[in-house]
Length: 188
Image 1: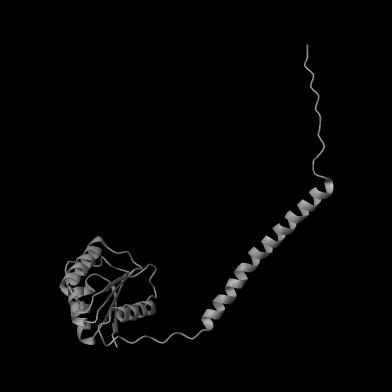
Image 2: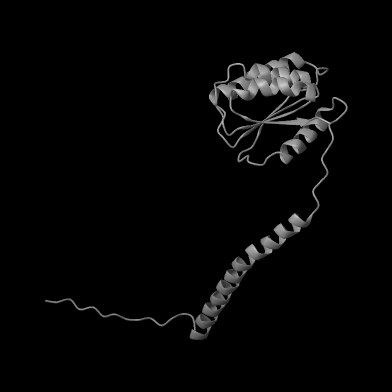
């Protein structure tokens, strides 16, 4: 005995006109989204052109006082102007003024961090930036940091020293063995 089934097709609950309107609306929305997606990159290109037409901001001058916020802004500006060839966020070692509370503690902590970073190794394309209201103390920090540096361990790394010309040669000699790309910027 074979079972018999009857297939009944139920009529659509939505009238055909309404289905057609819904499909047309979806098609129109899809077209509009496609056009919008194609126009967004063009709009972004125009903004990039506007930025390139703007005049570059004048360089900040080094603060004449020990204001930490002013020094942070100055160092950020100098680091930003020397980022050519750098592919990662820079390591910035900003030593506070010698007149600040707990200067020696800050110096010791920064020295420990810098030595730890150097001993671990830093990949090429990175930047090490050193600065302070006290150029001599910054130079001391760099020299102490690089005492144990291995030859050519930091090839491809840029080292930016923001300080006074009288400290330049001492720092340059201390970091030479590591193979860094040394850049000196006079704090003025």
